[in-house]
Length: 306
Length: 58
Image (tube, rainbow over all chains, first blue to last red; front, side):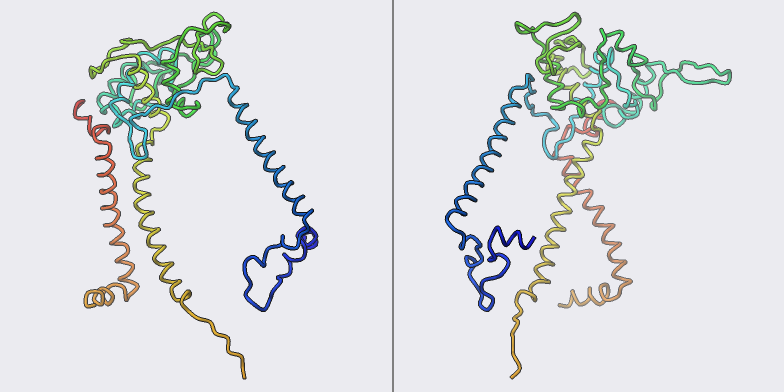
């Protein structure tokens, strides 16, 4: 290694030029002894390497721009921001939308009625929601399965018993489970909102098969889900005007909550972390200054024996 | 200097009292720190949290 370095840079790097006096920074330069030709060679090599990198970067960017995909615009959500919690009234309305519109085709297997308690519903309300559906339980003492009203610990009912049944009922397209859909799609809740409100007529040249619809935000454009949200497609309990964009915003907030139920606690924890680490870093800085003050101000003297 | 001398002699001098002081101050510090951050969080998100809207549904 030392021999290689010596061959490339000259011996200057390996052998300090001036041992007895404190030298200037410039005297550590290894390029001083190079010939003009060597400097030119290394300079052009650097230019070629940098230029190649720049060209590769530019090519990569242009390849990305050629993708036929419409990225959703970034919206300012009520929970956008370092310390902003969810708008829980919006989560509650979003649950109404999910229950009355989305749940016809989409399952939500990982959310139970107990998860709603203290987030969007009181315990009594969540119990009433759970009791609206019949759940298969058992076996009883005769060994038979039976139906009973839902309990808080039950998960949201699935519209289809399995994926095959869901595909058979939907032209072969599988309506994905919505529990973690916001985390599972690029763009998150912005994508969900743009998808729900972005249906339009297919442009010329796009061929859709039967049962497909055109949505520019869906990768590929052809989506098997029909437009589900229109103005006043449902009625809100709290009297909020149910416009299509309001419904889409509420259900996106609800889905964001199902994907990240720890969201509010996480942001509260950030406030605590900022507070405690400000204190700790200030303390560490002070102690460092204190301990180093004696080291930095001392003087070392060399007194040779006479 | 009187105050700091008293503190030093009564608490910091002995390991036993020092450890006790650390435990006691950690208890009170955490309670007040949690209270302060949670108050800030609630004020920052006034009207959005469940605790702010739940009286409508009870």
